[in-house]
Length: 169
Length: 154
Image (tube, rainbow over all chains, first blue to last red; front, side):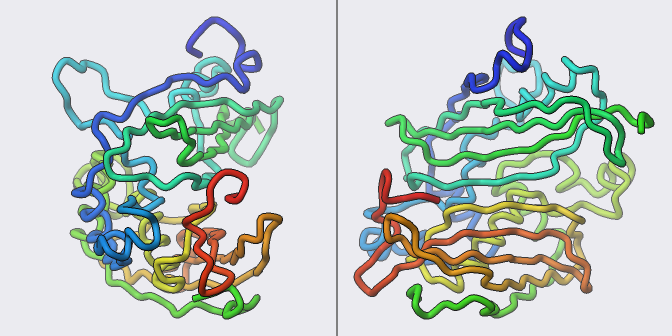
């Protein structure tokens, strides 16, 4: 993990806070809507957006888009790894394989053009050893919290991971 | 659409879409997902062992959002989505999105909610199930987007 404490000691502690590399912008909103032919006037018609959402917003499901790193940026030598806590847990428990078995997104305050989104990862739980058809390992639940520059929570993604060792049924 | 117009068991109109390589690549790039299995055929086949490039999860989420809000109209506000990924969507597939209203409720803050089970399938095989909780106006004067703090309980 990010320090020498056990995973259990880090439950509930925010880790790996990251600030989005650019503010929420209209171009990606239109690219996303275009990619799925989403004609919702909230994202195309300023008059509708003013009336319903007090100004333009981003589609809620774009939450994770705003903190994904550029494919390349000057000075970075290591690829950015999403959901670092998941990889930390695999390493800590010596579990080489892992799957994400559940992904839930909860939407809070709307994301608005110009917002700068911060994400942080919070370990919520780690199970004792369990055996499934994949092998023996542990389940864990990690929340990724997204906040805007005013500190409002705009969304929370929850991932249930299962790290395991093959052939230990 | 307002809450009174929605009932448990209602089915949403289906959406069919012919997926091409462009569909997959446009969706991946729009969601800033640069991983090669979503744009590089050789990588997908030879490194991932899949039959082709395949649709990424954030873009599937965008398809689900579009499908649900086509039905609700712009006043529908997503509260929660839960995904169960069962298979991949490839170029050449005809994607079929269907949904059933599982529950219609009003919460303690008088916000109206429809719970949907949305299914993305190809040739009858379910690729992704998505449970969606979406807020709907309870009257012509109500607007879920105006809810803040304790009035919004997604």
